[in-house]
Length: 365
Ligand SMILES: Cc1cc2nc3c(=O)[nH]c(=O)nc-3n(C[C@H](O)[C@H](O)[C@H](O)COP(=O)(O)OP(=O)(O)OC[C@H]3O[C@@H](n4cnc5c(N)ncnc54)[C@H](O)[C@@H]3O)c2cc1C
Picture 1 (cartoon, helix red, strand yellow):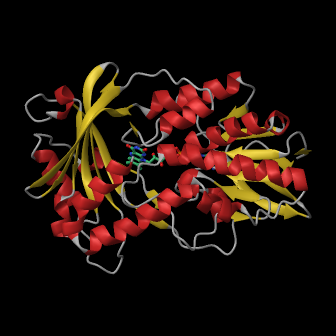
Picture 2 (picture 1 turned 30 degrees about the horizontal axis):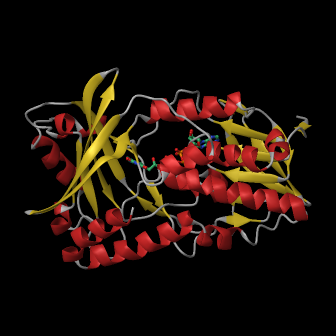
């Protein structure tokens, strides 16, 4: 098998982190963007398990990249956070929107391709080995000799697994289902609201249950999910299956658990290794926060940090990436993740702090 030498940079994964890395690269250094290839194991449009809540500073990043992502969405004006009988309402017109990742990621990828991104679908990263100052990447289609590899391949990242020493990842299990919206049981749809319910913390859950309105094939649907961030692994674990079954039945949903979908969220921890010479991790491959765990805008921001790190590496011809962690920690995305991870420890140590901390997080936005 011959080794391809056509590219200097390879991005693995065409979710928001991978596409954003290329778009930022294209903005900061069109020459380097032209020498970049992105491989994606799926075929667009592809599904991604996600609540689709698009918030935080997403709009600022899209504006910075001069992007308009026109996809169907539901505007959210109220967020209702529950803890037993206590409720906190955050009211803000167009606070965030609910999109479908099927649409959003497809349009994001196509927009980048229209700007010149070389994106190879159905191409799967298999492994990477060092070859002096460069890397040899093997995919299901062949071998590439490259200078820089970006792991944007999500929470079960294979690129991350190639970084040594291998560190155990903090993975937060989630379950998610879609069901047709029922006006009697799902008030969120007509109210343009979402519910985030922390009540099961009394049963040991270190996370929440969510109920988001959405559409599927133009029909009113609901996205119901549960996540356990497992901040204190030594505490007794809650039964996600038991809690979720009960929450669904309270909404008149009786689905066989075998039909539920599940995918972990990767949590960033201070001692995570997010770079190595010639290799950078972005988005879920590097990790997100454990308080809110809304990772789309974080993935988009990681792209900014990675692109500026790469541009500087080529300028000074130093691919050690020793500065990546500092750049990440000094960037909004690193500061935000670190701050929220500290807050999540407080939340799950003392449940009375949950709603005041959530209020604080969203007020700051
Ligand atoms: C159940 C659930 C609900 C969520 N809800 C929300 C929410 O409402 N709002 C929010 O902001 N965030 C939410 N998140 C988090 C959000 O989905 C992620 O943070 C975000 O998708 C991270 O983007 P990414 O580009 O890093 O990874 P991904 O979006 O996972 O993209 C990774 C890409 O890499 C590709 N890939 C993987 N392996 C390979 C390989 N070996 N070779 C080539 N390509 C590969 C995949 O096909 C995929 O396209 C949720 C997550 C889960 C699990």
